[in-house]
Image (cartoon, rainbow, N blue to C red; front, side, top):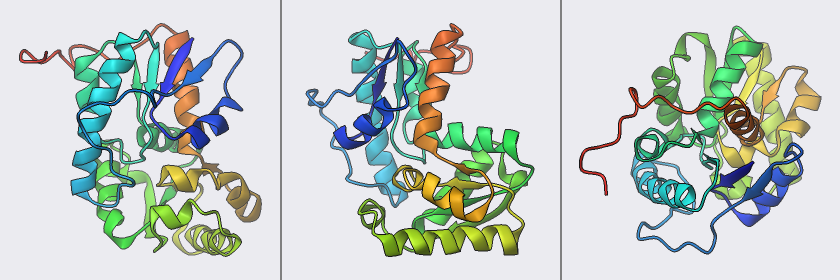
Length: 229
């Protein structure tokens, strides 16, 4: 099974440590398309920019023979549009985390990087049908790039925010509403006593499951556009 991960080399190396036997993970760092890639996604404009990049990358991944694609942003920009263009599974980390959270808890909180990304997380919760199960959507008030530095003070502060979601908002699980934040999930979970969902790792498991079960998205839901190249 060959899975394409649309993320950095460092995050690819991280994911390879969790891949099941017989699963090969790779990215397409050598592919230079026409759509520029934002360095992070903290606005709707950046979501749109990344969506165009994702669509182009997914089409190329299928052409190269990958069995599935995992995208790298919790907001899942471009995922549904990319599904129209290919037949292989395209897995968004946001969907993977939110749907899994519903299986683990009746109410869960989403912790998102900035006040500006709270509306994006809220829209995604509505889009996936998970909003009735949201205990709270909380801003961590730190940029994505700052979270990537993994500063001990950042981790301690994130633990405090997640603990407040549990104690004050009634959250029974925490969804890290940022792929970079997800890489801190193990450190958070050990301190707050409820499941903390790592959207990056869950994306890998979802992709493995889909390919292993011989499933992909319905072409009734995601038909091939008449004007696609």
